[in-house]
Image (tube, rainbow over all chains, first blue to last red; front, side, top):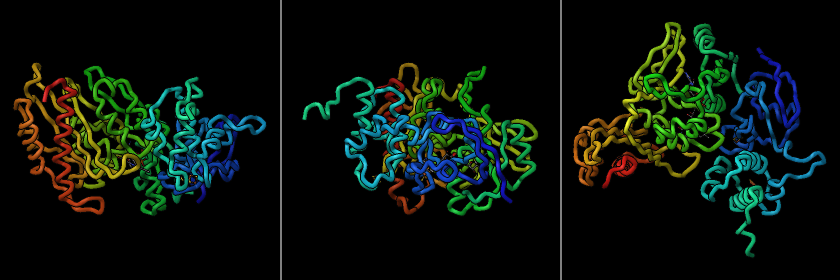
Length: 168
Length: 295
Ligand SMILES: Cc1cc2nc3c(=O)[nH]c(=O)nc-3n(C[C@H](O)[C@H](O)[C@H](O)COP(=O)(O)OP(=O)(O)OC[C@H]3O[C@@H](n4cnc5c(N)ncnc54)[C@H](O)[C@@H]3O)c2cc1C
Ligand code: FES
Ligand code: FES
């Protein structure tokens, strides 16, 4: 017996209303009902972070989140980071510039975690950044360039010089 | 889609109790980081769920009039480790839960779920054992409080009375437990993030005012037995002794009389015994340091 519920929330700055199956994960609804396909299905058991989105500013694995729990919440996916004409945000551009993307499957999730980190407006050490990024698996890049992209954007936003590139 | 047969949603504790009584077969879901994984894996396939996500009254940390630290069962690990009261009175608990999974899991997972699952490796459990936490349960006949040692019955089974519609509403740390007390937790795992503990060791000490004597030492382990456990003999062996490397060493060796680890694919019994001694030693040293003592 299927059970449905009318869900009201904000997705990428837009108020939405959608009838959802209570069995749906937030990943299911974002992908299937809203075509937000940056939200990837990797493991679907919370291990890889490919499905990560921000909910009221905190990063969650949307595969371990019932869609109906999003009632009244503010959801942000990668699609919500770009400007009105599709301009890339600083953190997206940094991933490209630092070659932090290869196949790209892990990238949207990692950028959402990076978005949560950068929103703190704090200067983190490399070790702290590694820990904050540790809920994601990337099978391609070896993580170093991802760390560099996040660090570079963090320093830029804090108005600090980027020692790693300034010297070369 | 999750393979669930029905979803009931509670906004208040009273509603949750009513739903429990009306649907005794249904499983409670809080943050869902255990339940939804088990549903995907098939263990809970087809189950009905009672969601308590909406009970905001169960979130947060506060100080009761008599100084008891009250942690609402729906408090997430992220909120717990950042909370000023936790940082002030029992920082080791915040440090312990800051080692659960990864950041997204810590944003979702709750302390209630971490204790109600009855799992010996739960990162909060050994510290809650070591600090004599009380578990608050609310059911149709009101509220009862049980020492955490009694809450765990056996692996995966806790003292939650379904027939009374009970849910866990808080974890309490009495003032007597945390006053003048300093602790340390070591999660021994194969990697730093996204791994379950091979052994969890949580120790805390209260030194005499001159910092020369161990007034009280409490030691607890996760994964040293089917449920978390206290090392009563080791604790007794060091109580009242002078703060010295010898006392620390003897106490650490004594934990072998208290623990009953087993062989598993994660680690052998012999290895767990070895690291239990070593982790106890390191936790004791660090706790003494935090308490202002000299070793
Ligand atoms: C990728 C991943 C990594 C993980 N790593 C760790 C780790 O390193 N360390 C660790 O300790 N855990 C880890 N976990 C397990 C899990 O995140 C924790 O056990 C978490 O605390 C569960 O909380 P929850 O709110 O998500 O529980 P849920 O899944 O909602 O519930 C867990 C159990 O508790 C019951 N329950 C929950 N709340 C209540 C309540 N208030 N009253 C009565 N019953 C209740 C539920 O019925 C269920 O049986 C990991 C999980 C994942 C997916
Ligand atoms: S798909 Fe959600 S964590 Fe892997
Ligand atoms: S770029 Fe391929 S998984 Fe990260």
